Length: 380
Ligand code: FES
Ligand code: FE
Image 1: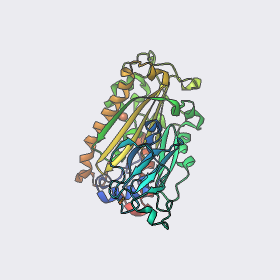
Image 2: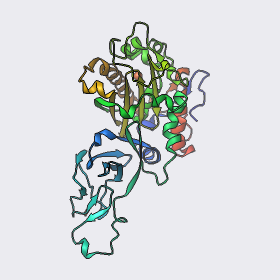
Image 3: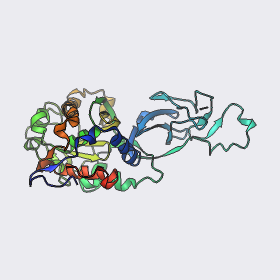
Image 4: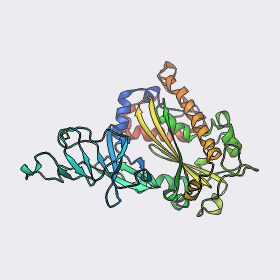
């Protein structure tokens, strides 16, 4: 397994093929992205009834829409007649129904088949049974999380559990009131790297001193390479003289109202496997959603969320956004630099993790377990 020591200090990573093999990626789609809760859409992006977005979840296209009564619903983006893709747009808004562009089967926003040419002459057709295929949906932090599994895993254990594991309890993240925050900025990064390289990068800070000068100025404890974020309940403290989580350490915005005293002047990072990173700072929340598209390509949608009054006042967010935007660019460049090497014979048996990175071995073991335990065989 991945935790086998190579030497007392070093343990092996996954072999290179785990980052380059389309068949292994297909298995990850099936056993990870299509089996777990997947953070798909920000609820506020679907503000009005009839608004929809389509998202790629594993190998499936999923429609998330808001009903007339204001609920979010998710369906497979497939017409029940002869299988045409129902919505080809990434986002849009309909009045009351979704109509297939092929033979005009028409579904209401609850997914029920409500009209089709000659449908009245087929009274035996069950309009619910031939409605759109529903996908499980939960809302948390203001986002719609969907799960394609017939029997979704416990949301509490697999999603909320990540916050508990990291912060000690779920109340600590609830203090940020993320679901009530407003979108200040969204940047989508098209990263030419396997999604696991992005997760691994986010999980360690061994690289912080080398590639993140602005971040380590604000959070000096990151400069020593320890993943301080991985001690339960610990958040990295702002350096002396740092006034806010901004690119130059200048003043940010008012501290979010419900934070506890200990959460002021600290940064917390949470990885919600498989595809979400949540970054908590006193005056905003940064949430990354990954959409793995291929073994070597991942879209990362990053939202900067602020108190509604900050966004409404059209305050200048640039120094605030710039800090993590730089971190993102620095991180994704590192991941893209690593991706081609995964196919090299030098990486046939993988690389190594230093002690500061040993917890990444737990992530690797988790991936292997999802792929079916012994599947990957020995990593050596
Ligand atoms: Fe959609 Fe025929 S495939 S109406
Ligand atoms: Fe980084």
